[in-house]
Length: 167
Image (cartoon, rainbow, N blue to C red):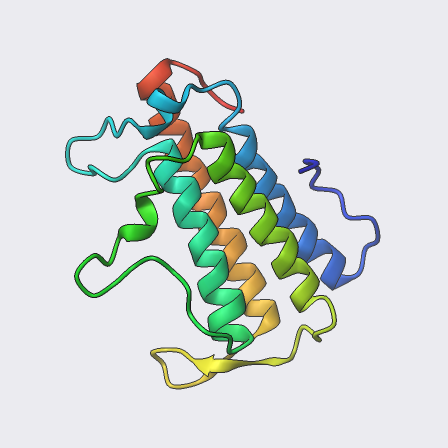
């Protein structure tokens, strides 16, 4: 994922997508150089699922939820259940961090293709807790916010597990 916050054109759609792509690429950059063992370590006692690998897994599945399930109305495939609502923070232990990151980047690319033909004012197939539909514009903005917020978590967790800052 190339990381730039300057859109190729100055229209609203390119600007919104560039900000989301930048946040996604920043999450991936924060994974560079960390060992698989360190990526699975959750250093915050009150947050036992907050690991680098767990955060990337979560980001992968919130993209699925908001774009594919809520916006497009596709079937839910996420790993969470009523018994384990945070399962998205627990990537398959047989996968390396590189595989978790590759799954995230692949899912993002597929989602980008799926939404490319939709107008920013198009309404979601699904409704929110507020009882109404979301525009694609809102979903893109929400995912930019969520990914950016989790990038801050990635900063903290990464520094605690292996001392690397920034990224």
